[in-house]
Length: 438
Image (tube, rainbow, N blue to C red; front, top):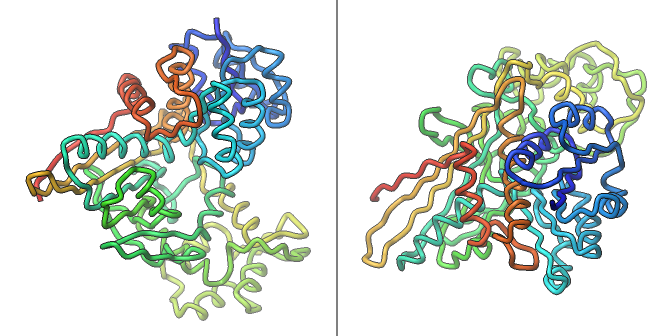
């Protein structure tokens, strides 16, 4: 029996391990530096081997100790280069849900020459979004059509009944990652003209998009969409936009916060400050923090932004718990404290692609693919399931010889997306497709 080593036993790992235990026909080893994570995995899956180990820095020892045939790397993205290099040296297959980084990209030829397979960018976003797009675009091209525009939106949100705070958001992933995205530069293309929105400016270009059965959500552009002109093999495309869904009001809040540097990483002296004093100082004022923000932005105390800031704790006289901190760290603390799911609440994942194309005969159509998925209270979130199951499927398919091309494979490869999308349906992760004439 072959062995799959899962590096990282956090939130995403449980659905991943569950799939491997049920369908992988393999021995599963899960390693994590956090003992509590390992205990949870051991309790949920008694048949696996679980070890408390520094999975990121001890990958070599773990691969050797358990004679791993494949690694599912669920560690933070910064571990991709080192783990990739180790898997190359040990000639062990690897799957990773994070974006492909430059150091790993540089060893692609070596991976191919070694005869091993790495599948990267295989989670929800990136991952399922890539596979959905590749499937649709390939079918259009196979029939002689040309893609005119491509949009892809994804959001991880509280479900409607769990949307119980004025921010319209709860954390299903790291607050530091969420906050880091608030300063991200975005790049899109409309009618063959590229637009760059630096340092969080993308939130000022938000608009509403309708999701079937759920209603309207805000959309803002996420990172560089234009690279997918090549990534999806659509050189003919005139407009391309990849974005993120949020409940209405999120983008307004991020814009105001960006204007007073609330996402800066510069470390400040915060000794003796309260949250209110920190907020006033960040706004360049002294005295009443709420009044300071109202004055700067020309808002009334009853405005939605001011009420959100008050609810989460920025106007409290409570002392900060750290003597030095960046604005980003202060926000991260409050987000982690207040934007949390209750045990009985469900999260919601929405993924929606729309490809507008012209057929060989000159007719124009819009093809939509929509995934709406809810978490299972008391078990795992939708984010964990839709992120953790795809890499588990890929590991099984690699060991079964279904995915067998050596080198670094992306989900846009037919060898990857066809069997994985089919298997996701059996796991009740289903994209509903529709076609309408324009």
